[in-house]
Structures are given as C-alpha cells and as structure tokens.
Image (cartoon, rainbow, N blue to C red; front, side):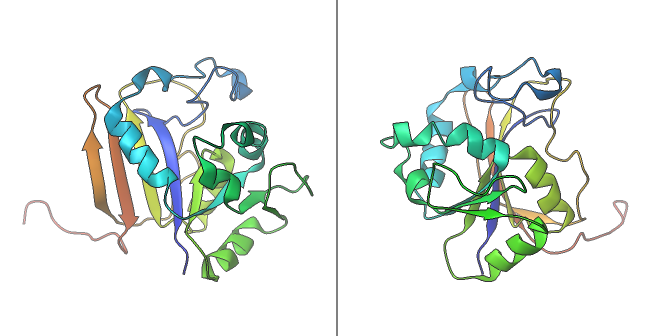
Length: 200
C-alpha cells in the first residue's frame, strides 16, 4: 500500500497559503505571499533534500499543478525527481497539461485516490494544494503529515485544518529545530485517539 504524505509549510496559526513568493496565490485578498522565504536554513534544507530525493509520485491540486508546471521543467537540476514522477492532478476541468507524465483525476476524487493508494508504486507526496488536502483529511486518506512550522502568525489565509479532520492519533517519526526557530516535524498515523484521565 502506498502512503499519502502531506507536505506543508505552515505558520503558527495554521496558514499554508502562498509560502513561497508574493504572486503564488493572492486569492481571498491574501497579502502575505512569500512569508516563508526569509527563513532559509541548512537544517530545513537538509530535511527538504531528503524528502525531495526519495522515491515518490506527486498528488496535486489543479492550482498547484498550474504553478509548478512552468517552473520545475526549467529547474530540473534542483529537483529532477519532480519531473520524472507521475503527477496525479485533481481537476474536473483539465484533461491535458504540459508537465508530464500526468494523470488527471475527475469525479469522486477521494475514491480515486483511495484506489491509487492500493496500487503498487512509490508513496504519494502532496505539496501545497490546500483545497485538495481538506478533501483528503475528511476521507481519512492522509498517512503522514510532514510539516515545516514557522514562527510567524498571519491572521488570514488558507489553513491546513480549516475543514475539520477525522479524529486520529499520530506518532512523531522525525523532528528538527532550526536556529531561526523553524520546526520540521514528521507525524505518522498511529491509530485511534486514546482517552484517559489526566488526574489518574
């Protein structure tokens, strides 16, 4: 079974919108595009390279695909695996694209992704794709959260847990704290939420 790993740059108040650059996603009047760019650090870079160099296929929302499609073919030396990976793109409006290999998912996206997870192949890595993440969480399809948490609050913007989640427990697989206060954490699914009495 293939794991579905959600990768997100996230602020302290849960915002995942447009971390990379000002023109990335200004929808909803978001004015803080590029909010993660000043926090570059070797600790973060080492963890990112490890993820980027592992075997994977990509699972992307249409907007993220549109942003990445013209970029990564021009920067193959930075992330060659992104160009070689199959891109599963959730979109009810697109039937073809310029960045392949790709497969467009339509209709019941959650059902299609659940079927893909049962197939042989590398893990599915999802970066960004805020709307798609909400669907995946509601249908209990996320196996791992790989989060880079930044010491900043943004007040508005698309949030990781905006649409609610299925109650679930996670275990910490890896973590690191950069000198600039950024925290990299890898949480893997660990069954159901366990209840108890804190006074016991």
